[in-house]
Structures are given as structure tokens and as C-alpha cells.
Length: 266
View 1 (cartoon, rainbow, N blue to C red):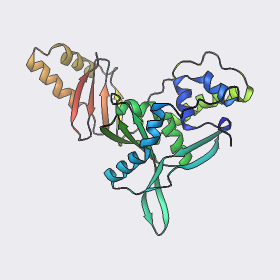
View 2: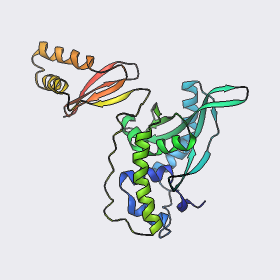
View 3: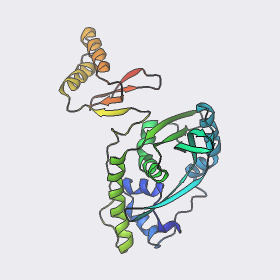
View 4: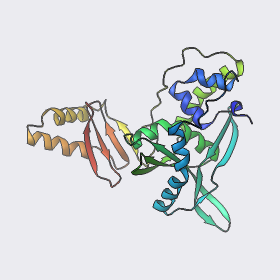
């Protein structure tokens, strides 16, 4: 299948980012895909991929299988295709493979954050999970040249269905050879309810008590008693299954060790 004849993981990211016109031109054969052989960011990801996967496997004590496995399927009339960096199988017995999980290796700049990487690549991850019939995907990320982090992103059917409706809309323009007009804005889909390391996020903007506590925390730091009381109660409002609770003023976030940290957003 030619590259223009299907939707891949990176295509999903571009569609959700609002980059319809250039992708449409490629899919309809009007222009050739960009030559990325001299793109430093892309080549850095390629050149560090094996090291990234080796590091991931060592940290998790996993054996990796099926590197560069390609799967394709017709999903609601749209041809989809994905190549996974590797697979992990958590139940290997009697030569029977069960419980497969995707591993995707990424390289990004030193100033990026894991949350932003997860959000950016969520369309790709959810497509790959769907194609592999997997429960989820591990995201293994190298930041610059001195930091590595990872997360496990679970399957979320609601997100995938909403995303794929947008992808299907784009594919309709490809089939009709009709230039998409006005599709240059990022499509905002919440990822709050997608489990990351088995925990979700919660937008507490409509929780008046949380917002009041956030206001106290951010404006009454000079009042030590009120400040410490608000700090304690804000942390208590984070559920055991929540990795982050936030509003416009601040976010209460759980780190990898389980500790809760409050960060101002203003």
C-alpha cells in the first residue's frame, strides 16, 4: 500500500493539530512527502530509538518482541496502518502469546514535559492500540541528552471514536479530492479520562470548594495558617485514582513516587 493510500499514526497527529491542507496534498498525490533525511529532530529520534528501547527494557525488566511490527485494518471505511517500535507480552506461556502492549520510543527537547508528549502523541498511541487490539501502550521518552521518562497509556474507546470521526471527515476530502478549507485549528479532545499509569486527571474548575481553596493558597501565602490549611486540604481532594486535579489557578499533581505537588498555573 502506498503511503498516500492510508492513515498512519503521525497522520492522526497532524489531523488533530489542524494541519489538514498539507497532509491532504500528500494523500491526493499533489505533492511529495517532505524529505526528512536532513531533519535533525526526526533523525535524532531514529538514531536514538534502539538505545531508547534498550533503556526501557532494562528499566522495566521486559523482553521486547516484534520490533517494527506493522498492522493495518479498515476502520469505518478508512484504511489505517501503523508500525510499532516494539511489543511487550506480559503473559508468555506454552508458546501462547497473551496480553500484548505496544512500546513507542520518542525523543524530544530537554525543555519538554512528559505530559505534553503524552497529549501530543495521544492520537498516534490510540490508533496503534486499536490496530494491535492491545490494552494500552508504553511511551518511552528521552528528553535532550540526559533524561528519560516513561508512562503507560491505556486504551480509551471514547477518545478513539471521537478522534476517528475527525479522521474520517478528513479522509472524505481525500476521496472526493476536495480541498479542505478552514481546517487549520487544533482539534481539542480532552484526555483527562484516559488512564496514564492507571490514573486519570480531573478538571476541578466547577468544584467551588477546590477553587476557593486554590484562591486561598495563591493569594494568602502571608497568612501561614490559612495557607497551610488550604495546602493540606487541596492535597486531600486528590483521589487515589487521580494523577492530577487542576483549575485555572493551580494544579495538584502526583509524581512517580506518589507524592503530591502543588504548582501555580497563573
